[in-house]
Length: 540
Ligand code: ADP
Image (cartoon, rainbow, N blue to C red; front, top):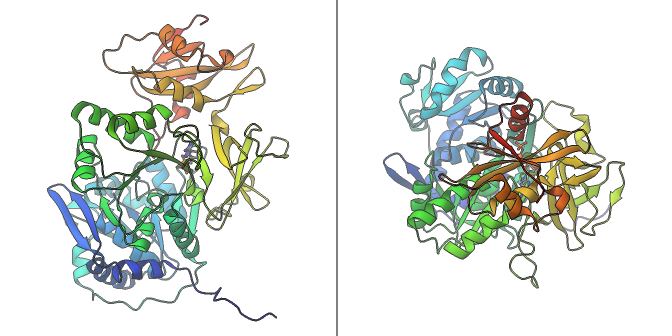
């Protein structure tokens, strides 16, 4: 037995995070964009509503450990659930509103959710499914007429809160107990449940505040465009609560014009989203202008971020875009690409960055050998740390872990300074003549062409080389750019043997439920012959 030197048992729970928000930062505001304007609430008033909601959960029969599902946009009410559900001992199950009915039915059934909170404007997705969701005891409708939704017995959110007291006796919780549950979007096979604990979320929030990650502080106003229905909106709601940063929540109003207005008028300092939404915003700003001088960090991740996008924002609008990397299983924050002190602006910015404090990565070859961090040796990235998944919810998924490390399925090299450079997802890799071609690198170069709006590169089966890259390209309206023009643009920027032999001109790149390029759909279209207008290119 040794003496106790430090209060190592101090519980790292979300209750601590919530108390900071409503107490010392009780004057910080949360703004929500509504159909007819913006509403504002202080942290202190939010706290009182969270207490009412916690009381309501108890009345609805929610027991510690029960799953409470949300099916909602980024709003004040969703934020109230983010705090009330875990702090009262239950598990917040955020459900991705973009999933197909079949996946929704599977996820609700697998999680055995007891109560569902749904935005009124999304109730028509749920109403037809109700008799296939037998575990649900109650449905609460946010922001609209519950009776009009057609969901039997639906309760109105505001009526529910009004019927409860603005005080609640929160239980003492084990910080290793479950706080959140989020399913992967199932790009391969069935969606898998990832559990977040109080401890993992609290440490994750703290890491998000580190200056070389997101650097969240009480002087920030954060607009999470990343949905609260997937991967905790990158942990921003809890990081904001912990530090007293203010939140600007867009609701369903994420179109470029509405977004530009929110960023400017609300003096947002940090915004976060996937590359496609920032590409749309860039086009809007280029056409209509806008003053984003307050925005000091535009965080971009969830998919590879083209260097051309970052440069365009910085050079044309003075906004610095930083790339981050992560996945549902990693909390999701794993790394952020802040340049090192002695670097010129760009050479590290198109990497996935250095991993956050307390997180470690290693690169593993096909044969299991652990590769050196020399910037060259390429293999699968494996990751470990106090907020990285150690298993899936009620799903053994034996191939996903390797002796305490999570297998990410991302292919990368790590340099001696710890910068991770991702070249592909394992399932998107193009193997030509025994060598890898990075679809990510090709896509980045293609979108650097002024006429290219979107580009996704997939593998095309090839008798001689096994696979060759095929570029699926969306051109700007009215563009006359040809496949040969694109080939000429790529020549000199990538190795000669990487040049795609074929270009498919398509109307839009299909997207997954989280807004990422869905290459599975492109590959299926290639196989069934429905992949746009295909043009074979001559040698460059
Ligand atoms: P899914 O797309 O399967 O739902 P996630 O939303 O958790 O899962 O996405 C995680 C994956 O997204 C990562 O494994 C990686 O392939 C990709 N990703 C995320 N950020 C980046 C990045 N900055 N660069 C390249 N790929 C990224």
